Length: 119
Image 1: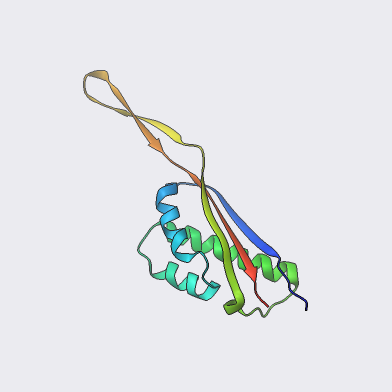
Image 2: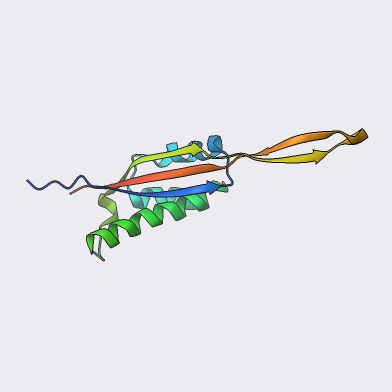
């Protein structure tokens, strides 16, 4: 039996999204096949879905480039891992009354998606 357990991954770094909001979406697509996940992401109303879908498509193109296959059955490709790590926080100042300044924290995150091909 020839079982291919290669993992193909794609990473999106320094995205201006909150890790909490991204993890909520990644939990929905983890363990699903590629077609289901892209369909779910297309119709979810969140800002992060567009970035996650791009990373998912990039991971699929990594499979196509590394295997030299043009026709890949996307029903047999499963999202094995999908996680978001915290990136550096951009710190800005909001001017307030009487010369005060309030901090504004703009979070960034790194999204990693690993695909696995089932034979």
